[in-house]
Length: 361
Ligand SMILES: Nc1nc2c(ncn2[C@@H]2O[C@H](COP(=O)(O)OP(=O)(O)OP(=O)(O)O)[C@@H](O)[C@H]2O)c(=O)[nH]1
Ligand SMILES: [Mg+2]
Image (cartoon, rainbow, N blue to C red):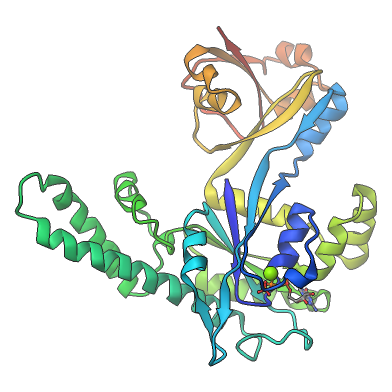
């Protein structure tokens, strides 16, 4: 899973990237064109609790990859230019986090001269929509030339899908907010469209702006939220300071500033919701581990995430939900007595927080 962090120059992308991946980048690298890649651990209280119960040799969190996508340039006229290197870097991301600046900082002026989150969101939207329209128009034109030749059946299927999407884009609707069918998505996949990528709009606030946080998030959500678009906020600078503290110190720090949730927690929660992701656990004295899967995956598919061989060697899954396990005092035997331990077949739909033990041959 790879999330691309995008946004206008000086919006706070690298600050957020460093916060979530707990890396340090040379400040002199700010604005350079190479993208940074980092891994973030998915915070998981359930995993922590299991780990405290089992004292395993290792505890492994699920991970998500973040890319600090560079390459947006300030043009001669002061406007932002979406370079081809930027657009092609974004194409490979599973979802995008668009950092939108709300903080004021005279030392780093906003490239468009003023703070206006909705304008910045629109700048990206327009660019993505225009990019997708160019791709679709070119393809539609080509298909029109080829229809009527032998073996044009797939093209005849493809054309109405592309035309429908083009019409949506012409109406300034990003494709990520449309309920497209699996068949339509399959057809569109080849074109690596940009407006189809799930997007989290992440407002970067100064700590002094906490009183307006809810209102600002609400305002942007009212205008932009949709099927594939969510809106959240984080405190760029202090979130970064906080990410460098240990668990207890961070909690004291958060209480002091009245922060309810760290940027990483917010981002991961929102990204999971946006992408329809969830976690299951495997526990034991050797290892406690959290795994990320798409909601709706079967026990057999989930087993394949642990090890590809488990797909064909799958026999059954032993399943206890984390909540039932904890309610039974962290004991599998007691959970079993209470009727919460089950043997499930390969078609079982795994639930968020299931503890699985895969029986395989
Ligand atoms: N006051 C204030 N300044 C911030 C905040 N977040 C980031 N900054 C400052 O804004 C500047 C830009 O932040 P970056 O995180 O480098 O932004 P960026 O989007 O990566 O910028 P480029 O890569 O140059 O496009 C830096 O000088 C940060 O210290 C914040 O929450 N409050
Ligand atoms: Mg940067």
